[in-house]
Length: 116
Length: 109
Image (cartoon, rainbow over all chains, first blue to last red; front, top):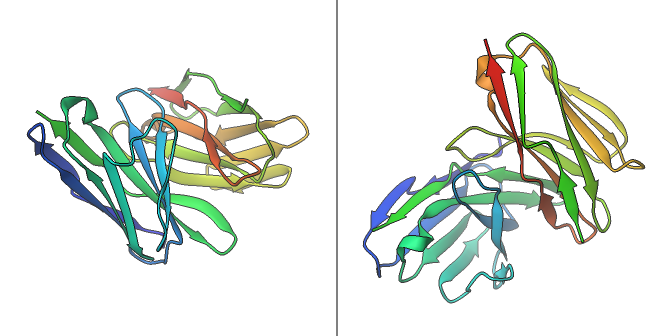
């Protein structure tokens, strides 16, 4: 149980284009989903927290107009990196929390983004 | 401020036992998590402690002392596949997860 998928696993794009990453909880309903970014050999950095049906809460320093998050259903959240630039190249990981007293976050496999 | 400390790197021998410590100072406490992260992969959940004491799960055990702000992850009968980073994370009073920087564990034959 508690499986989270992410798609795509790899994406290479040109500078200036937008990239959408999907995060799905496959066998449970996730009241809350989280988006993290991790640069090589660095810690996980929380970008934003999203609750189904409401606006995401962004961490300080994360541009909400650049990283658009939509949590349209209890099993799907999307992160769109708009007008991507090379410095946005990173490992993006989502996690999902079932709620209802369970605080455990289950992570998706991550998406590697390379912006040329 | 909120702070989680764990060693940056540890080395152990295959078949041996290793203990990875984590100390924390956070605004409130609602539980402590341990995650394993292999290089290039996302973290996977190992354990969650909210009460004092030792929780055993196969070769892995996790201990918590809330009064000391201290936890450890104990790995027994080490295997080469246990080479990974181990992340300690604390849920604070606002139910925000505060992450440690992780401990890179290197297993040698």
